[in-house]
Length: 424
Ligand SMILES: [Zn+2]
Image (cartoon, rainbow, N blue to C red):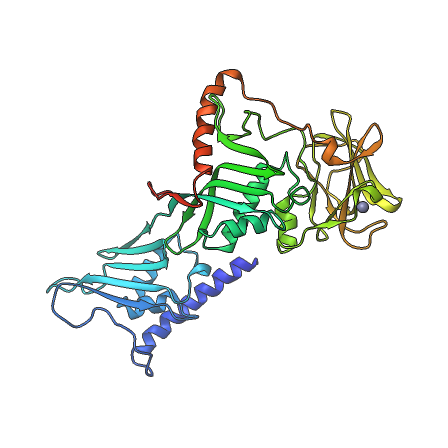
């Protein structure tokens, strides 16, 4: 029996016990004061509020609300979309009905207030119960963020995103920006104090205050005074929008700039430390500090030349790419399944996991780019890694989109468009 089945079984058993308990307690010892429906009072529409206690079953609350055993069973059965494991303790329950003379005194509508954006109504028609979900929409607005890099991208975005209420949303924004530029910039190594980042992006908020980052409409990354822009644009005939730089060149390219996703290493390092170990000159390679087991990705399409243990490199993989470059990944804890000499790998594919095999004093990835068998600094070797340009007939539309996007990037940080149309 699986864990979830167990829970359902326990819940069903609990519900049965609670049904009996609810019946018994009508005449039993004193309970905490709870509303009972229907309340005494003048005839007409009535409503009463109750709360699901900790460890209490839904049936118990329904019983207090005036439902007999058959009604409880039928109402719970109608609530098909309820996951009994997810009923939050403290959930509010609102009963309403009609106490006009001659009317059925039982509740006609039981509202289960699951969360700020979801209410489930149990509705009675005679003895037949059905359910209906009522969702309060999330609202989406558009914001501008400006940040200056002092230690790393995350800190820059975090400090520049005062309008985002949650730390999680600020991390999501930093990761989304890193993803957009991941073919151009190794965010963990190539940013310097004084570089700047800015973005126009959508943010969705639930009535309960949950925040999510939506589309990044445009972003800019300024390094040593020169900005690379990322403009979201959908060429005609393309199924979806993608990012282009200010010259209309795709921000996708033949190679990723880093063998570890910024998302992975920044979360490991608490988004504070600058994860650099060792130096290129002394070392002929680039070291990425990361937790053991962090996925290592091939930076481009290619064929595995070598996947085995090799001296100080420990478990290592060489991948040959179509342009003749070879990339090398060392100190791996393990190889990803299916990765062996001769296998084809694609850009971004996980080929192994960070470890400390071979000559390594702590878990990290040793990464090399070899050109003609000689190790090259990836910052130089991958520098001309630019994607294809937009076709000429798209340039007029792109220029208009870019003009609008840059106007927005230039605006002061904050909300630049209030929610217009409810989404979600
Ligand atoms: Zn190394």
